[in-house]
Length: 250
Image (cartoon, rainbow, N blue to C red; front, top):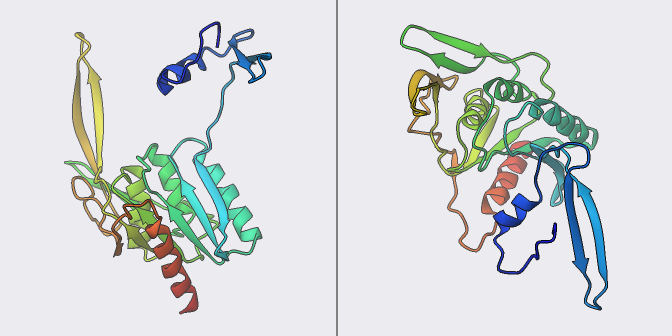
């Protein structure tokens, strides 16, 4: 790769670094592949901006009346990607949704409000509390899935904005939480850079769920607690499907 041999002992992060660079005309990486018969194939791959999806969705194979939406992170594209997911799943005829927020470390606050608003029709999504006052940030209108039964999967990697979404869904009785207790990140911090390149972090506000549950240092306790399977079987997903099917049958 760019005249540097790639061997099996080369670390993955070093290979990744070789495949990245400034996006501009003529900039890229030359990759040469040597086949088993000794023939070589060389290709130039230009650098380009790659938008990694923040939302993944599909109908659940075990029961195609159920849809699965994983929100990996909150970015500026997430609300539109989520709308597309809901529209496509509704068009496919799903009657309920599993929302997977596992290992979602959060992201942009306004985007998390837009996401929660797709499932919560009205009322507060979160309260922002300072030492002077408390204000409610309410749901946006026009949610596309405010009528569909929900189950939300969470774990210890569910944090910050993802916790706000999970907390709003539960507090508005829109769905159950399945999994493990979430991380517990519920503060707003301001960062001030100093002349010596150090910084001061000042907590300026705290986020509370609609029922005024404190998140910071506490997290959200799931309605159905699951112990992760040591063999990697997705027991949380299985329980979420079971709970959602039970809701649809009631």
